[in-house]
Length: 365
Image (cartoon, rainbow, N blue to C red; front, side, top):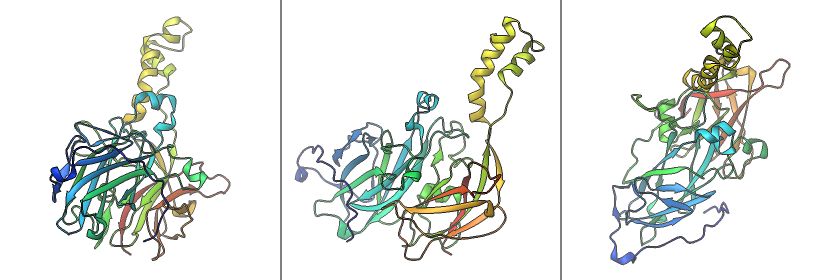
């Protein structure tokens, strides 16, 4: 087995005697950190209505399961919420989180969580990581370990700068499901759409927005230059993406709002700083979150892509094809995931300063 030399975690707290407690059967799920099958935590604060919240750049939870000598399919539901104060101050905690999830010491998947987004995210975002643990990786005692690490730690400095340091901090583990066979995982017999790819953990671009009153969570508008691509069926999928240039939101200024509330641009106190002006200033940020961001589509030849392994930061070659607004990205057959893909405008005169991309679909060839 290849050793990735990830930082070792210190022992956490054990509760009770192993032999006195029946392990969790498969299928089963953990929705509280106080469940007796949660035998070990390290740098993770246990929750009552969730498994717990990560408290460091490397967090761990151990659950005792009885798999009856069969592989176990594990699904981990994650959630990130960013406070209004962090958004207002432009805190580094408001940056996207790149997380690498390990089980039994082996990297399984990476996921990107971005709650501070121009199209919402006020209620947070959620994402799902799914993987299968072979029977040979489970010890006799049935202790299944899940580690959540900072996925940006080994990236090139230019790429890592776009993510929050100590990415897992504040991320909540909502629940962990155990099943005897994969559930809700794409087989890639055909194309997988953006929402399915996001929710299954196949291709992550920031998580699904938690929108109060909406009929269901959704991936939202294009907002990031980055995508994280994970393996399915032992290989990385071919992905198709669309790119665009984010344009600055333009709405009624405070002065315009004041004028509309009482006439022209007078120098009187009411129109310089009265209720109309204060109301417009307070409403501006809410309008920017409520209205879709403006994005100018970019053709595939206006954008360049680079990729790096989340495991070791090494550059990954990409085969880029396509025309018009859609680009197709293929990885070498021998390349293992997860891989971070970053889009940027080509360095030519008049090029946009920034590009964002969104997944169209993913498939095997």
